[in-house]
Length: 298
Image 1 (cartoon, helix red, strand yellow):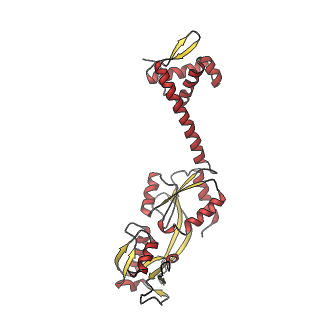
Image 2: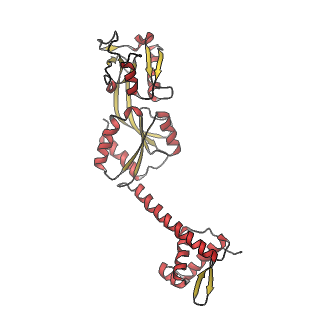
Image 3: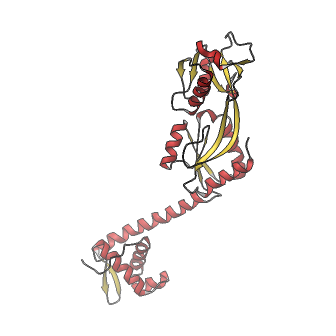
C-alpha cells in the first residue's frame, strides 16, 4: 500500500485509532475527541501509511476494522494504556513531594551519618522515596557516569563536572590492639609506623588514597597485612591483633581497640554531598540537595 503521507505515527494517533474503532464512525470519534474530522482522517491515513495496511473498511454508515485493523486496535489499546501508566508513574517519580531520590554512599557511612541524614529528610519529606546504593568511591563515580545515581555522599570530590557540599569533617586516629605496646599512649606520629603491619582498604578506595597520602608525607610505607572494604571489619581485625589501622575516630573501640590521636595536621576526612553539574537534577533530588545545604555542615 502506498500513500503520500510520510509523517511518523504518534502515540496520540494510536489512541485515535481506538476511538474510531469504538465509535465505528470517523465523525462521531472526532466529536468525542474534540478534533475535526479532516484532522482525524489524516491521522488514520498516517497510521495506515506507516503500517502498510488498510485498518478500516469505509462503509456507507461508518467504518469497520479490517482483520489487520483488529490486530492494530488491540495493540493500540495495550500501548496507550501502558503509555498512560508510564506517564502517571513518571509523574510520581518526578514529583518533588512524592518522587524518588537515588543516593549512593560509602560503606563506612552506613551506620552513622547516612541514617541520621535520612531520618531528618524523611521528617521533612515523608512521601519522597530514597533508593540507596552502598558502594566504594570508584563505583560511585562509575554510576554517576551511567546516570544510575542522582547524588552521593563520599569523602573525595570527584574530578570533572561535580558539585560539592561539605557535610562534616572527621578526625582520623590510629587504632591498635588492646595488648599493643602503644595502648597507653594518647598520640602517635605516622613516621613511627615503619615496622607495623597495616590493615586498610583496597587500592582504588578513597580511604586508601587518603591513608597512603598521609603515610607518604610521613616518609613511611608499612607492610599491608590485610585489606577490607569495610572499616568496621578493619577495626575488628585490629582488635584481633592482626595489625594497626588508620580509621575515622568513630570506629575506635568498637571491638576493643585503642584509638591514638595522629599528630599530622592533615589526619582528617571530609565528608560531602556530590552531584553532576552538567545534568539537571530531578525535582526530588533537587529537594534533597536543597534540604541538606539548608541544614549546613555537620
